[in-house]
Image 1: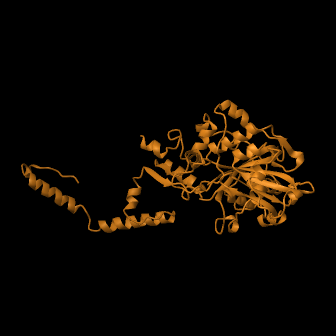
Image 2: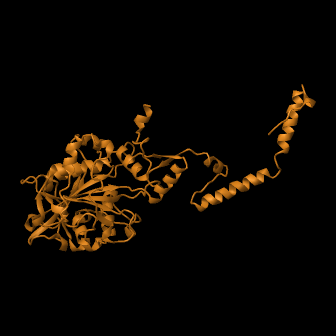
Image 3: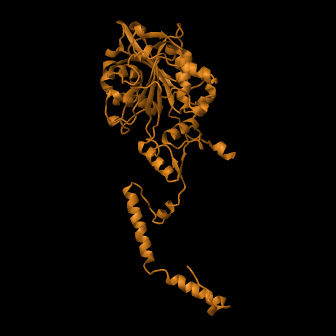
Length: 423
């Protein structure tokens, strides 16, 4: 409102104010309220077409001045479904397409650069510190029931970056079983992941989704990855019926099952196949051999490289991934009887000591929603900062933040509650 002072009202301050107020009221049209309401309504309609529901009309105006968006992580920025994102063997790394809808083996691709080194913020940490900040921490999260039953108790990984790099180095690519950049066969995937499928009491949901699923989310992720790689889960279970088992317990953090050999097991006559899956640090200590390239068969056995596997656990943990070790071996058929409920000593109390073969490590996480990556990019382009709030572990939050595009040079690490309180 502009008010022009003239000599007519010189010295008459009250009159000047009255004229100013009359002018201000006169400038407001009678239909302003209706115009504003219609404008808000149109804005709400436009936002609804973009899947954004606004309950209060004035909130549309407030949104125009937003500078920071704080969002929950699980189920909002992520899919709220644990997924196997990577599988590491003795000589290769395989990336799994967690957004796949087609049931084909090409969902797995060998990519030896994928998660090949520790996250930058964990380069100089010891294995103990990496575990403490990640999802494999046995202490769990305050106020949460842990869904990861295969946590790491002790990881003796080096805090020397050069030594860590040397331990993590893969052998030269010999194209076994496939070259870098290629996808393995369905038979290889079935053989490599059969431990996670058969050594499990879980039931996969309808169509590989969550509806109707039964079991631990970490274990279900392996079944889901196998299902979308084209493996018939029920056929595999029928082809390799269970003979005996060691039930899972949080005291020893592994589960073992003994099976009739399946067609892809490459098992000698007169033998059962024994699968053991569990906390990766414990699995490494029980292994005498490693399966070259994750391929089954006595001809592919190699002496285990413990430093390599320990560093792989540290690498995957530093990226906020749950890690699960898959092992196998063969035993004489007369050593167990059908229906035996075996104790943990069947696995960790054998007279020969180390006796298992390490097949590979499963890296598991709740992946980001693809549409959120673009949404965050657009928000940042508009000058709006996006912050993620989660009760998850620090390294997991940082890893998801990287994938979503939230983490940058200015905001390079997650901040925990105690760190926030200390500011």
